[in-house]
Length: 553
Image (cartoon, rainbow, N blue to C red):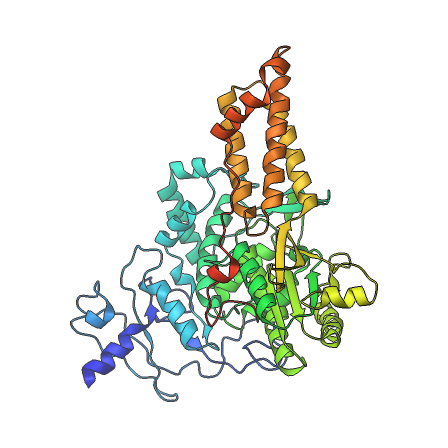
């Protein structure tokens, strides 16, 4: 009996081997339970304060595990030869299972990090009070190698290759500064890229050491919040991507009774995130003030543009390593939980939602539900400092009866909506059944072809083999994303236009080019270098993973 109790204690949340820090005299993880928020997420009731509550109730509950490890601790905890009993607290409720020692130090996702996920999964209201010691030199090293090697440098001017020359010494110094509280975030370097509509999107390029630390913190946050995020969220999450969101949208609209679609987009979302609300949401799960201090530094570090520094009061820089997980946490509390609650308590019919970052689509059976939801959604967004984009947010009739109803009212064909690079439209199968079909957005297709044309002109006088290799990589990359069922027409158009542009460039290389590059000779070149047109993605209903946390609501 005693052996079974010891095994149970050693298999739960992991304990760190890192020396104790200032303010934490004992080396253990403590998770604190709290009451759920009235606003939707787990947390303290009422209005939360920006500072974490380090003296929350039930702080002393549970068993304190001693730092001495069992024999054969390098083996899995349940195989250890013997264990050391932990002491019970002087005051508290019934004993709770507590962390086991880290099993395999040096691995990025050893038992120490795995213990975070186990604790988050076991108690959805637990708050983690000791997380900084999980940022080890090994985790920093793994985070460094996960960065893009050829990414643009930040304000420090340090590239990945320059940092790699003395990587071990630099990472050791960085780890020491983090643990001592001497690490300071640097401002982000401002750069702009063109958007599809011709406007400029501001980016914030962090310094290299900031990227390393942000990646390490991102790993820890993902272990916690991946247990909390709903299945309707697909953007910037491990094991999920754009096509998973597209598949969930297709299957949801085919299987649920959807007659109205709300296509919504949040205006300037990354630049409008409220810092106070962001930290309050994080405090629902994170009670380690040192982790919160790191995140606060990145939020308020500001940006440097043309040598001028400006302070950031709202928003998180697009392009920063930590921004995607922070955006998902923010929208998890602002949108996902609220929508799920509204669907269960307020909707009169079926509803579904699929969200990718700040882009989301909501399907509703009844028009009255969709209109009321949109009205309340505006109020919900304003409460947290966000606004819906007026031009990109539309409520349209879309579904199996849309064509018939619109023809009866004399309004023409059903409207379409764009999501993740595809235009979704109503159609029918050869048996007359309703189908949702997708095609590449025409405006973006034209913009992509124009960009290829300009770059191809700059490569006019390069050897044909180099031109062919470059075009092969471009065409293959475009096809790998857009080669979905029912999109063959757009694929053939793209392939044909690229071939014509290539022939036009080759014929202008010399005076005899017009006679030499006939279509018969060009077809041989196309067959050799350009990938053929074929559907690469399976049908959405075949690929969609059905599970408790996957798919549309």
